[in-house]
Image 1 (tube, rainbow, N blue to C red):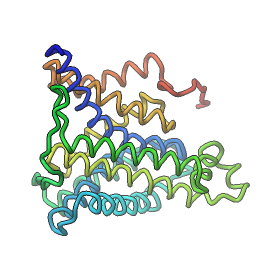
Image 2: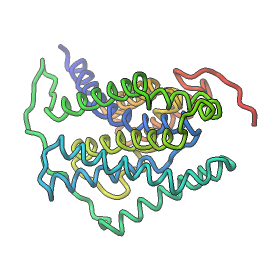
Image 3: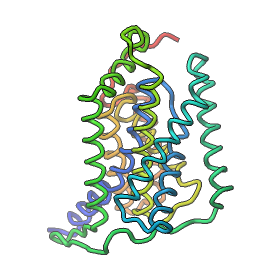
Amino acid sequence: MGSVTLQFLQQIVNGLSLGSIYALIALGYTMVYGIIKLINFAHGDIMMVGAYVGWFATTTLHLSFLPALVLAMMASAILGVLIERIAYKPLRNVIRIASLITAIGVSLFLEYGGMLLVTPQVRTYPPVFPDTIYNIGGIIVKYGDIVMIVTSIILMVLLHVIVQYTKIGKAMRAVSFDTEAALLMGINVNNTISATFAIGSGLAAAAGVLMGVYFNTIDPLMGIIPGLKAFVAAVLGGIGIIPGAMVGGVFLGLTESLVSGLGWSTWRDAVAFLILILVLIVKPSGLFGKNIREKV
């Protein structure tokens, strides 16, 4: 195999690891938007909280990767429900810009509240995975890469099963389709929305822990850029559409890795937002979205 081909395949492996993180965060954006038409800009910061809970679980409680991941997901799920009940629920029927401004406010509250609680100091994740490296035909695959991709796939499959086959999943789809009709059918809309926030926040926490392991460092502002990029991924796939968020996340991760592989690593953030601009110009509904006119 030529060195160019090898490098290309190496970047594909790196891109899948990064893309799986973006996909997990994008799923939370998409689920919340699909149900209450709110862009939850605090979502990246919920991921940051999850990363810190994971860090605390691995350093102070000396837990291994899986228990730390579950603990972080549970803590962030509770936080997501609290944010929804306290900040978003009172604004559900008001002008949409009010909810958007509140979401930005919650985001800043989490970031700077985090700085107050844990200080702005950058923390280092302990090595939770063994340093095993697999050389597959010249392509270097780390043990951590495999765990990250597999964990993301398992969580996405689990989400698909929940949304398609469980009672709460059917309620979520009903509320997403028509909230008033769902109310008339006896569905508890408030509980359904809370469940959506809990699941989305749990997935964000999983992404936070994986990100801490992948990049080895965490800080209170770590959620800003991944949060924005996951939003790009959600828009790319078609916001409100769950498979779209998965595909958008993986596509964005692969694009970033290939841009870095070409030696333009300083441009990787710019490329992500360039994709957003192009999608909004060419196909605003995203790859999986249908063009629906909305009355303003």
